Image 1 (cartoon, rainbow, N blue to C red):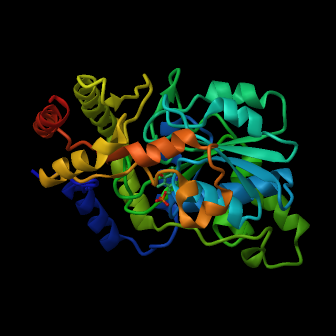
Image 2 (image 1 turned 45 degrees about the vertical axis):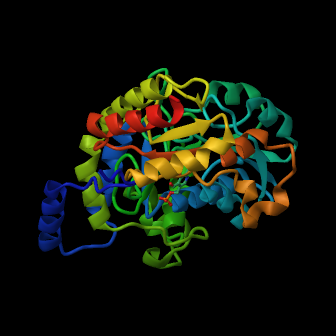
Length: 386
Ligand SMILES: Cc1ncc(COP(=O)(O)O)c(C=O)c1O
């Protein structure tokens, strides 16, 4: 048996449709298929606007720049981020000239230590970048209570929890905007790709402009007439309204998105089914393992949180010898990484440090079946059942 971290979820049927599209179309750069995919995504999400980009990281960077312009943030203003997340939740904040303020993790949903979050808010806090980690919806209600009536923007990084829900509402619908990743190995894939979702029209327009050099012509037609009038002296095709990037994706990737999206809910169901069985297995060993669950989860991976750090390496070695790949829990405590070491304060990130040392994960997707889970159960019995 080989149980890799990531597997190909693009079917032959998806590929046939892509090849057919490539043969028939004359336009490969962002065009109607991208717009179709965005409209379908908004419908699936239950939001007003979606902006397709070339990665989840680009989505995060774009959201930070767009939020900063929308609300007039100043250099050095603070954005609260988790110590436990993928680096590109944090790096956009730094790249855009703001100060990342790190908050420790928790062992119920892996997101913020909410008490510490409340303590880290200052007069300079402009946003909280809430990350729904590894398929578990974070406690949005608690975060909103903490924000109260302060002018603090809530952004959601939903790259690992696509389709997760809180009281029936999909995560990514609770703040100013949210990001998604369609990288290989995520809940659905466009090979590379990401999405920004929002219900805020101004934020949407800024993201559309900044995705593509700041060009006015990128805005949907209904917004164009008044802009043309104001800037009649400049060729509208080359009218730049703001600073921007080139984070566009291609028609090819959008075609894959349109193939994958109708299958997404089925993928999530299978992932959650595998997670439920995984949980049943882990709960046979309560002295060794800490387990997490949430009624609205959208399982991303299968995480092992070991109570005893000394058992991690030998257990990982045992499963590796039996064909199961594993890796650190995201990237562990990011503040242990060389590029963020200067932000590390000993004793302030105990849970992220604990997860850094004691946790790891294996892959989950629609191919994780009972046969694989039987092998895992046997190995865990062999290792923990002694
Ligand atoms: C929480 C989180 N944010 C952002 C990203 C970046 O997404 P991408 O790989 O599409 O750039 C990832 C990637 O897995 C992630 O896990």
